[in-house]
Image (tube, rainbow, N blue to C red; front, side, top):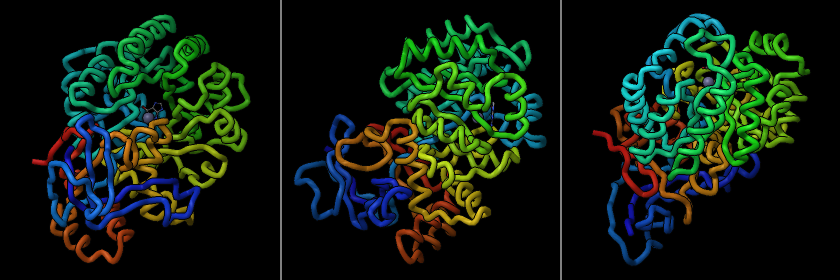
Length: 428
Ligand code: GUN
Ligand code: ZN
């Protein structure tokens, strides 16, 4: 058994649903005990530590916290971060589709996959729901590279059969067959899971959505990952393309909405759609950085939560401009601020960890540092830079310390990342 001695902070409950003060645990001088099988044996005050074990003292400037969970991003878009100008639909045509076309080359896919996972781990993202491209080999490579690093990933081959260049479209039957082959190879292999991934309604014919629904019926515990109501023109386009009352009805009609469904954005959802999503148990990945970058709109967090829809945070690389979940928390704060709502650091940290795990139905396994869960955690450096050091040392409370990290933190703060009790990344 490994016993780490450190300051420790972890959300343990939903602060949007319960009293904030009882939604987390913190230990000023704490222990984290990890079984040899990678599970958390216990966490608490140093004085209450287990009698036996290999002790490692991390010092007074370390803070152990749960790994971040990114509930929506596009691995192949890493190299086009910051491609500016235009709203969603212009941006897709001008930058995204040409960039994704390059993934017909497995060597290119491998090079980007390696950088992608290195970046996520360096930034403390230990679990993510990931779009690949339409390509079988590239998707296979994204899975294989995740496995090689011990990364906890939910990944899927993008499905598209219209309204995109020829080099990024396929037939509905091929899309089904290739998705099925990848699903049967990778779903539930170690820490990996498969997501059935129609890009969004506008790039799908009814035939493609039908086949995606077939796959979901065959494999009910597979995830469904797509986009919804990110941009007003997108919503209007869906109304022209399909004869359903609302956007969410398109996915529902084809059996794609259940509690394993994660829909990115949901900025412009109607009351009726929120009610439908709530009844189906489907989740929203809120991606504030991307929403600001593409000018998509301001997500009404409390409105969505009040409707009974579970929300996680996503970086949405490459419309999002950084993999850092510190930034996702900071931008989520600002998006609510301009709407007159101030989220506390406890609310933000919950969304980036346990809340994200809940959105991915993985909260029984990860998202917080509690006995019995997998030991997926970060060692943060409160003295990462001179400025962060000054800010941390002068913090007036735990809340204030976390706020400083949220607004000033990035990959420099992440000393090491651990998944299932194994150190998977360490800052040089
Ligand atoms: N909607 C459909 N595809 C995409 C994408 O690649 N990024 C974003 N942000 N929205 C999308
Ligand atoms: Zn996206």
